[in-house]
Image (cartoon, rainbow, N blue to C red; front, side, top):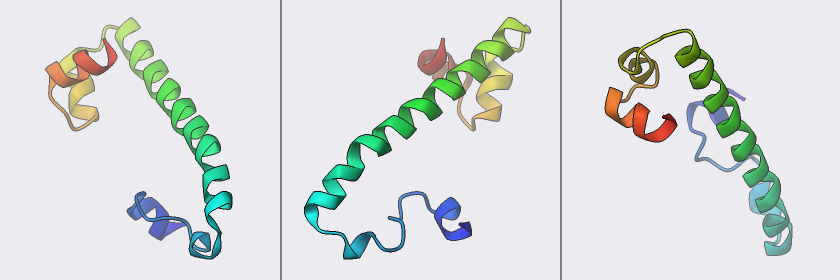
Length: 74
C-alpha cells in the first residue's frame, strides 16, 4: 500500500500478468474511481467556500495558486 500511495502512477502489483482484455476491463472501474474522487474533492472545496474560506487558502491546501484553484473548482 505504501508504494502505491507514494507513486500512484505505478500499476498495482500483478497487473503485468494480466492479458490485454483484463487490463481493458479495468479501465472503466478506474475511471469511476477517479470520478468519485473528483466529486469528493469538489464537495470539500464547495464546503470550504460555503464557510467563507478564501481561494488563496484553498489553493495553498491543494499546493496550487489561488487562481488555479478558482479555475478548477470555482
